Length: 93
Image (cartoon, rainbow, N blue to C red; front, side):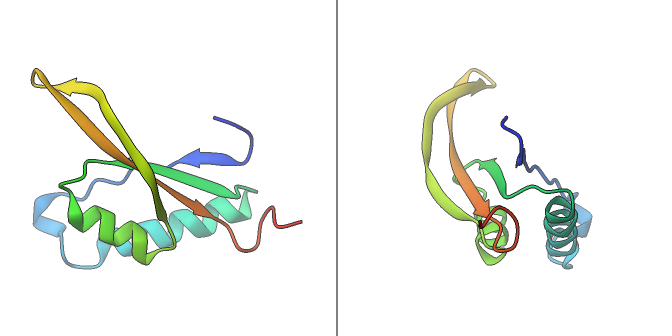
């Protein structure tokens, strides 16, 4: 990655989903990343993981596009959505 750009990946165990844990973690990660000078965060999410896509969209990420057939999982080619969040306070000059 480039300086000021970080990749985000959050996994919430099934027993803790739907309780706001993901939102709290992502908000904290965004806050700390901006304190440390990151102006862009990227995330790669399987298209069918709509809960994660919604979580990221609600926290300022946008879908940039689809990386098609980026890798195999259990012998099956998988696509991922590429999402990006640009800080509104870091790197705006």
